[in-house]
Image (tube, rainbow, N blue to C red; front, side):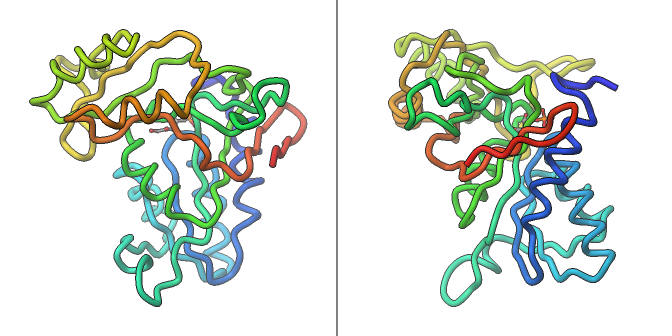
Length: 241
Ligand code: 5RP
């Protein structure tokens, strides 16, 4: 079966490979999307077999799936700060990830996220984790990021953010809900502008530029966060560290 980009088998191999890094007592960030869902299901089976794991969901969807899998859940406030254990690792998907080491070395692991409009909370959880394991299928691999960058904006700031995105060389498009009239509304009650910049030669610089625009809650460029990328293939998993 083929879903967005890769096959379910490729996504399953990636998700299950990353889930193997979950150890007894771990606090785990639970990413969003169809590939991260395979990791959540694998963690659910580990919980069934007696592993002590607590999950920090990155979206309404990952919270619901984790509940179905009987994974005990905690809020960020319960695990971050003071003497709290923190998040040991997060497992999350990507819409595009630089793994071609022929490109600029500092960009390996840079990604675009937010296909599920969950990138704001994903970035908070992924950045708070000691380690971020990215799960992907081969259709997500890139030498240079060139997909549209999702930008979550306060509804009132939609026009002003769009103007600043154009000034930065991008072309914003309001994300619309499939099979429904009206825009996609995020878990945080905001809108998403998908912003095309063509080939992004300097993801870190573009990330800083978008982040400074008033009214931007968060954008989907994740730079310098990934520790490992698990790419599920037709016959195994490639792990890029
Ligand atoms: C959600 C995301 C997802 O992780 C990303 O869209 C990948 O999803 P999938 O594994 O279904 O292709 O960033 O905001």
